Structures are given as structure tokens and as C-alpha cells.
Image (spheres, rainbow, N blue to C red):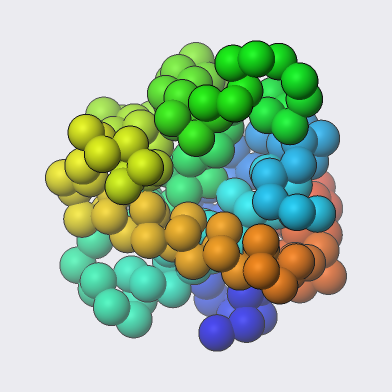
Length: 172
């Protein structure tokens, strides 16, 4: 699977996440590095893409709207966790709650979507077991992308990020 190469997956992402993708607050994620050289915006799009792929190819009976919206917002914490603030050393344990709070504040998201965001860091957050299959799916997609980004320094700009940054793409 080449992340960003399937146009039908990108159409699903637009269909359910257009309002999120087009928002200035979500687009501000380009300012925050996530893994290696990958910023949060790129990572969130990649996790969403992989999540949709997983629904289509493995978990066929899943709530696609919740998967897309929660995957887009799973790392919507909106700060640079690499700076020297003392509390950032525990970023892995706390950012899911912050992302959920920010997502609730800025977007209309369902209770299921909130729980998917909140539980995406399992097993690091061992008490936040994903109990929706959609939460397990986004959790898995996040781990796949994080590993790929960290090990290979994957760059999504040409196949995924630039397309979603174009205003005309989001309003289609």
C-alpha cells in the first residue's frame, strides 16, 4: 500500500472530514513536528488514509465516518511536544486527552469519535483499552504510520499532504 496513491480512499477522507481538513486550526498542525521530519498534519492524514484502507480491506463493517473524523483528530493536541517544557516528557501519556478536548472544542464530534481519539495510545496508556473496533483500528493505523515515519523518515508531501492543503480540493 502506497500511502496517498488511492484516489477512492482520498475521496472518503474528503467526504467525512472536509470540515476538519479545511479548518485553519487543523491546518496549523503543519507547524508541529510529530515523528522525525513528519509534521502532525502529514501524520494525521497518513493515519486516516491507512485507517480507511484497513476498513476497506480488513474490518469491513466499521463506522467509516467515525474512523475518518477521529483519525484526522487523534493527534490534535496543537503544541510542540519537542520543546523543553517539563510536562512534555510525558507527552505520550497525556496528548490523547488534550487532542480529544481540542477536538470537542473545535468540531462537532460524536461520543464514539471522542473515545477513539482518547484511546488511540493503547498500549502505552494501558488503562485506555479501545473498546470500539474503530478505536482499535485507528490505534493500529497510528502505530503503523508512527513506525514507518520513525524508521524510514517517510515523506507524504507529494502524494498526500499537498493535495489536502489545496483549498479547491477541500471545497469540492
